[in-house]
Length: 203
Figure (tube, rainbow, N blue to C red):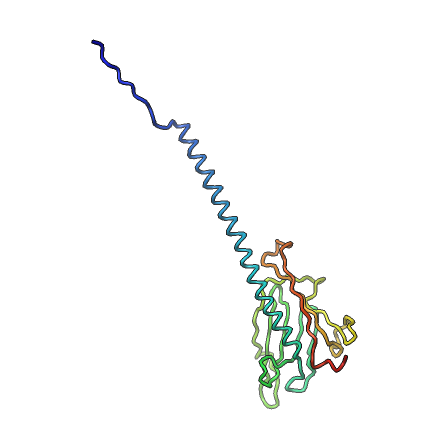
């Protein structure tokens, strides 16, 4: 009687198969990681841009209200202090308490700021050291050819010479907001107009 031979089957992976599995797994993980990273990068920009636009919009709405109510200061000074393409300084009773504040809106780098000085003393003075400043939007991208402020007289003509602010009766505002400067096509432009009510008598 001849001995029975037992057949054995090798069900393990060969070295080549193991390396192939490792390589495929690594590629899958790399693809998944790239997809997750891209998803968070895109959504992070969207969220950041949305917050920047909302902040700038809120700031512009407040600024327009305050410009419309520009008034003679508590010292009797003219409602408008100074005007340029990136800065507008004026007097306004911003909190309706019958005390007129000195208000500054200006672009500092990519930060759009609001500064407020309340009059103090008797007789009242506006001390620059008392200014309270706040950044309204940190991602403003206006260039020299894209002014934040443009000014117009009572006839609707744009004022080029800003050395004499007495002719200004209307202010147009434009803020270009982009949370990622490299993504130019995704910039958002805010526009608004403020007619200075206390100067309407010039119309």
